[in-house]
Image (cartoon, rainbow over all chains, first blue to last red; front, side, top):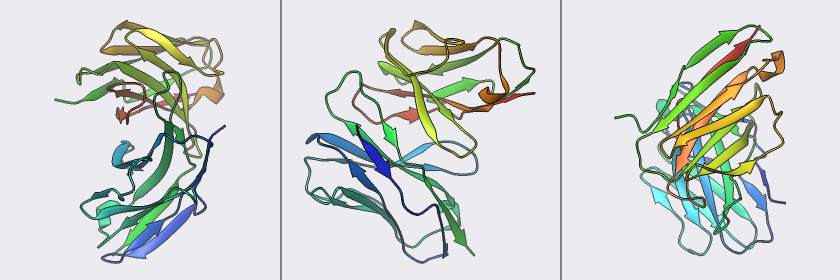
Length: 116
Length: 112
């Protein structure tokens, strides 16, 4: 069975700093997706970034980028120039590709505080 | 223009009652889901439907029954509510089963 581990329950950084959230996963699959979701205090779950396992290039979305290390099964999220609005719970998630009856597996989340 | 909407956003009810949460998506997606997020923020899937067909049914008490009248709607009905059912329930949709999911705003259910 797949598992997703986020080893940092909570982090705090100063505004404008760069922060990296770690995520490791365990799978025997070769084809899969990895995601980072953000849940701000408003409770809405928002997709931040997505990575296909077959792509070697790391995904980026503006200030958000990932460091995807397939062999190490590591998928960290880097937030550059952090802003107060980045304060949220961040969930790393894994999903097998091409499976009709499979599901997203979420990690337990990292609570990120951006300090003014 | 909300993509995935849920009603109500807040629901407070007493033990033993029956309640429903509605979900609608206007994205034209084929697959919809229900998740439960507990007080520790752990997010766990409950059900998924693809084109109105039940695909995933996790080990959820049979007091919980999803109903999909059409591809754009997936409702969750809960019978005989218990204190432990208090949580935030999220609906989500995706274009196909192995694709990222788009979440609704959540429904905070409080059972007293």
